[in-house]
Length: 473
Ligand code: 5AD
Ligand code: SF4
Image (cartoon, rainbow, N blue to C red; front, side):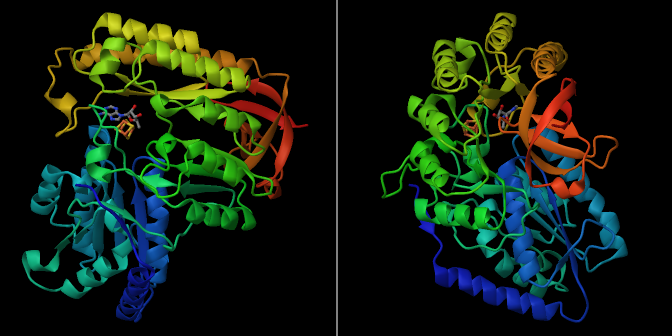
């Protein structure tokens, strides 16, 4: 039975004390920490908390592995490809540790929540000193202190393998080192209850739990007061925000409340399950002052048969209805999606259904993946006769189609003037600045770096499959 556990202020303050103890243990010289992040935006957001704790513990942050006294790897389990990269990179740290025996290697994130993977790390990756799960982020200082105190003990006793999968923790007031000064993540919930048959997330991130409305609003106000201009609300399925809270509130209500905060900023969100995307949501988005007219609405497949096998709770017709409705409310809507190619049992005709749906909807951008079996999910036990090479052919076809549509959509912008938020420097000439339209389209332009953080009008002069190019209007 799932229980929600809200971390108390006292528990959090206790962690602050652990920070002080770590600080005194490493006070004899400067210590440097590096956080390496894999996977989704939620992980990027978690890594900001990890960096926040490390700074409170007295570490200076670095991006130089050779300089680091502590390397924390925040892992992703959603596809095998990410896991292989993590294992390769963690394995390679053995060389660094041979040179610097004091190097501390910490592995956190979703991979640590899979029993077979935990075992593998424990047995075969002896370079790892600390394993911890996503739900233990709030107590990282305590785990780090224990790990430092164990150092020097023999063999296994020197390591700390925490991160037993557990119930849903909600923690407020954790420190955070944000990555930029313009864009900010705002996590509104954690976990997922959907159990799509291919997906590992509900097993590794636990049941869905929402933060209280007041806590989210307070954080949003802080971000806006601090000058952040582009705020992305994060959750595995933001559309079910509010489920399980005492206060009667849903995601559109939350959007409306944040939107009332005055200021010059854009409000975005990720990710929306199509089943739970309602007319109320579209209406609130359309009427809001700050909401980007962008929805990331993962389709996964255009075949009714496969959608059923995926446990997605919508069919092609329902999905198309939602898209039509969203576009009625917001004719300028930017629509993006995720698609999985080669789900077990997918046939040529199913794949054709996906292609035809993509042709019909004409997404602005698509994230496409070849199905990756995840141990413990229902799909991993389904017969999967199509070869990897055949799936690759499908994948390439879908990518070609996606590129063609994005290219055509981008080309239609040439000659138009759009309002953008300048969000950073590209490090390239002549287009040294990057920016986004309210709908989230990438626009490169040339200009003074002092413009970062400003909303400006840009005339689009050129386009490619991936981006628009322009000059200040
Ligand atoms: N194989 C391939 N892609 C997957 N995704 C989730 N699980 C898998 C898997 N087992 C994709 C989905 C999801 C995105 C974040 O990752 O498309 O929307
Ligand atoms: Fe995975 Fe489905 Fe939950 Fe998304 S909604 S995290 S695909 S189970």
